[in-house]
Length: 371
Image (tube, rainbow, N blue to C red; front, side):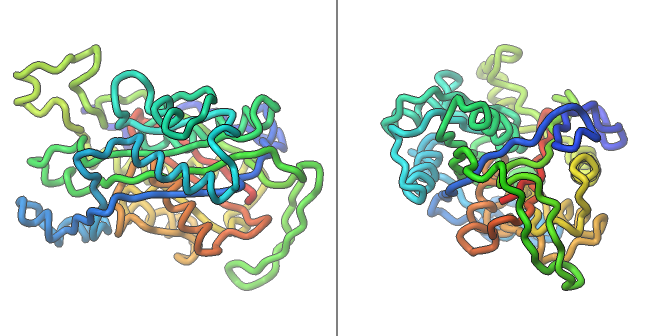
């Protein structure tokens, strides 16, 4: 597999209100509600030790203590539905009122139709629906896409769901990859911001405890974002099952239906990707790392999150971590931790939130969002 850990990040899209990066504009919208769902089945490191995995190695190298696995009769659309109805109920919006459904997933129910179309039927919606496949960056790609529909006036209510059944993509005989992943779903509902013309002047204490005055030139929404890809499929992929390599009995016997990953190379790339993409967005928007109230990073490995804390000098209480309980849930990871933050009261009107996803492709998506 090619070593991607030392490559410079590929050219990226970076849109911001200041115009100091690439030409573009901010995207006003409101995340009016969130929702999440994880299966009831808890699988601990000790459970995996019975299969031959080293429970202590799992925790020391990843920070994961347990993860959730779906029942045999549950697919990605089932998890997505549970997260979606919680999200819609919280907003008082019915399926009939949804104008667009985007599902970020790499564990779709079928090759076709899309999982989004299956979710649409479950919700009783007639909205257009499509899947977004960008692996662990999928939710960020879907968020930016959905925000564009709201901003343009083409949609009033955009439902975005990240849903994964990752437990079925990993080989039980691969003791280093098998323990990393879990199943779950998270959802957000986007609507047009009602205060996009109004400057936001919120004061809060952060870091040293000194109050800060937000530079706000708009209400809720994306202040700046970066999307990118490396085009390195050999680094992290499921080789069998597509048109390149249809599954045969021989390929099944060789485990080609399972995920293959160059873990060391991808880890180094991810650490650098988080740092560089966050710096790109901050530079484009004119904010500093001290201005950010909360960091919601893709929950892949606690050592990647710790590297970001060290690199930026971020206090641990400004970064939420739930991978110890859920493992890596790919496209579901950011909306899962976002819903936890919302339900815990960690998100207040006017807060600046940095969201960062990174994964197979290799792809990344990072955005600075005003809540």
